[in-house]
Image (cartoon, rainbow, N blue to C red; front, side, top):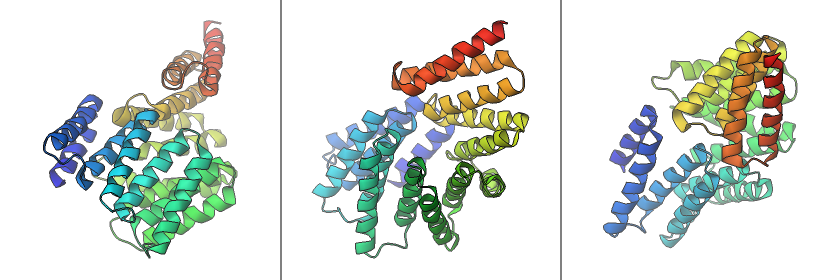
Length: 307
């Protein structure tokens, strides 16, 4: 599996989405031919493929791959393993992005109980569970509870070694909570620490875009629309590089449009909002509330730009 992950990492850095999907599908086909289609290694490949589909906002396919990976874990009597916990977390994350909040919470809490019952609170899987619950509770409006869980996860991570990626992600999660609470100074301090970690990494990280988006939102709230536009632009570019025009790309494009409007650049605002509307309609359907919202804003900005 070492060669598989090395090859996969290289493909992600290249940004060739077709090659990434083709490589993993090819690996699974080879495993089926070799009689390894029911192995734990095949479950690992399906987990990675599910994560890829989630990243490009193909949620139904993501859910299918995670479910098939879990079936393989169970058939190999690995139900209580850290690897199984990771797949369960990934499936719950897909539920969250699909808006299946109850199913996501049920799965996250199941993983947490499983890890605690097996005395596995000291590993990455447990910290990730706390972070994911923190994100879910943010979306549910349980901001204090979300912050508490995120801070607990960060405390564990700071005691470990080689967890820069995880620490940066956790810092951004906490910054998002403080932003929602209107505590902009604290949010700014947290996201700046996260960005400093990302900037020091030898290779670009897929979660860097999320921290840039948070920084842009803070700048926007503070009235620094030029800085906000630059952060949203970078977030959009990074999302596109790693996962193409996904939902995060559409969100960043919409936010960039809002910053451009504040700066008086209506032509650019109209262009970016139309892109957001087109991407959302393609991924979510034209009748989805987010797609409709972006379309209405796009039409309004187009009318303003035309004078």
